[in-house]
Amino acid sequence: MTPLHAPDFPYGLHWLNAAPTELRSLQGSVVALAFVDPASAWCMQRLADLAVLERRYRGRLQVRILAQPRFDAHRDPLATLKRLRRHGVSLPVAHDRDWHAWQRFNIESWPTVVLIDAHGMLADRIVGTPGVGALEAAVSALCEQVVEPPGTTRSVETNPEPHAPLRFPTGLVVTAERLYVADTGHHQILECTHAGRVLRRFGNGTADALDGEPEIASFCRPNGLSLLREELYVADTGNHLLRRINLRSGAVQTVLGNRLTRTPAEGPIQSLQDVSLPSPTALVAGNSYLHLTLAGDNRIWTWNQSAGLGILECRAGSGQLGQRDGAGILASFAQPSGLAQVQQALYVTDTLGSSIRGVQLRGDLTQTLVGQGMWEFGDADGQRQQARLQAPEALALDPDAPLLWIADTGNGCIRSLRLGGGVVTRLDLRKLAGPAGVAAFGGKLWICETDAHAVLCLDLASNTLTQVPIDE
Image (cartoon, rainbow, N blue to C red; front, side, top):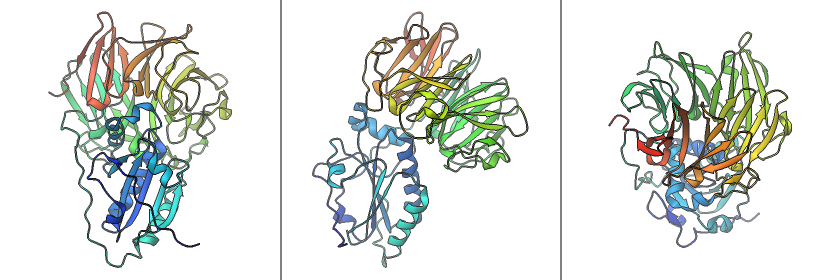
């Protein structure tokens, strides 16, 4: 086959965090163009792989991200940039709002990485996430052909996020006296008073996976939290680990996971470090079990700890991206992200399906409560058959009423779903910036306004919304 010269970027492509780029200006280096959905966990994993390769082949490899909006919310360039930054992305990003670059490069699915050699010729494309091996081999072979690296430096990120006490907070747990916050962008877990005074920080603020005392331990973009007596469990999403904080001693311990993104193996666990947990996002801890969502695996799992090291059980999902009801592996999910338990039922925010799913633990039957399919989303209240959400990421059970509180992230609002009756109702609040965490306690609703780097408190009786002044 005759090599083809790579086309240049479409005219007017909007660069979000870097100076405008023309492909011909990058000749002399290998170029990786990553076409991604900013809402996709698979795409974020591919970008993490590319970030590692870009550092390894600095000067020889240039990475550019082209983000297309799956959801209406991500037609807003700022929302797209916030979403990517929440996952630690700092590579140059272009907002392909009208999919012109997608069409020019004949892309068919996310994520796709188009590789261009140092002479500007199309060299390869890696589709999906078949592990980092194929991408690494292709990039390595091309970079070895760069005899004299052009000496270009990494593009400087423009319009950085403001310095603030919090950075993209997500997970929340509230008790009678404490507020626990997953300060995702700062790679820490905070223990606060309800008034926002920080009592302890777990994690030293660097993106790593060290165990130990609070100031020694480290996390990488932690998300979901679950409290069981004196132990706080953490979905350490960026590390692909399950961590546990002993609240008496403050010690942080890795309890499950090996930092790999392979498909988990079902059955008795021989070694806790043999278990792969691709992008855990939410969890519910019980006396001898732990339920968790794996956004990178599209399944719901239970770690049954009743004997030995425990048994890992797939409760629902085939692993394929989709939205299908049914028992066990006959069901499919589209990036499950939030989780709550009500007696013998789990409730799940299925983000890419813009839906709320229910899993009956007796029989492992999955049913869709709200939502109509992968590309059906909107902003509508009503009976659950008519209601529409957009990329919801979190939910919480109200301890005082048969209600689920839903962080409808893409619509910038909080909604309630009445269990049994099935009515979905939007709270009368100002528009929120990417809410991705919610907890209910004592007649109040606690909300992570993630893209605004804030935690809010809503008094449900008076409908008064205030910002919790954490560490201010």
